[in-house]
Image 1: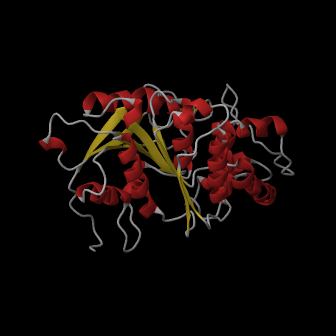
Image 2: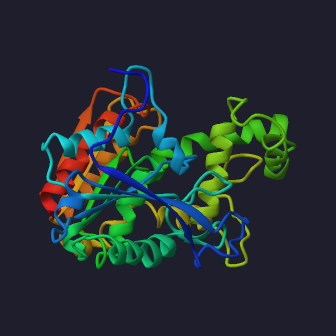
Image 3: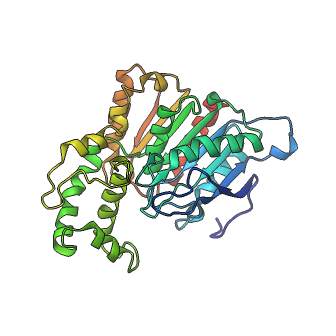
Length: 340
């Protein structure tokens, strides 16, 4: 295997998308975003053929060009996806690679007064734009979404919120069971805020943006706490409400409840009809996931079973949270088969 990029059998079209939904967002982040659309081998040779579409979304800190990063001796996901379709192992599909990065590191693919209207951007702008310009099977039964970590979260909640648009989902170690994946980090954040930042997130952000990002071990959980609060518990005026007391770590029940309302595990009963309508649900996670998202995956699977959704692909495999790009084609194939 060569250590450089390879010639693809399909094609990536790289677009620059100007979003009305993201104009004037509260963080002042760009409203013009890169958008990639991958068409499989043979797309140009069969002008009357239509394809299912699968939307690909990223985890926290992810921006679109990072998909081309590679680990030593491994292919990156765009290459793996192309290989999947070129080999004939999977039915051909159109893949849509969406950027929902923010200067807080992510958006959770939600509309929030703390970050911007990223759910609207994805659902009301990107989906119809792609359907107008590419030969998709423009129906929810032939449209899916997949992602890992925060992208896996987005892949779980977006079809719940918009079952009219998405008929299948695949989540790799998606954020779920918030008391397990998020809450244990709060106590670490409180100590660092006390010892290094005078109890102030403003001072943390001043420090973070004055030096190389993630140069300190504590950067990750401080950034995550604030970003999630901006997504889950920002007031209408954009004020970000933490779910804990920054001096003690004690939960603030009314704010924590706002977070829990966005927990995919807890969302299942409310959106049971939407989930029962899905043609494809794929769930996996590594057994050694650092944020214990394997437990969230199991909790999500059980919640689905409780509302009668049992036709689910579910697997826990021997890995951590990191470097699991080799799992992504498995999910794409599953969605392509179910949605084709």
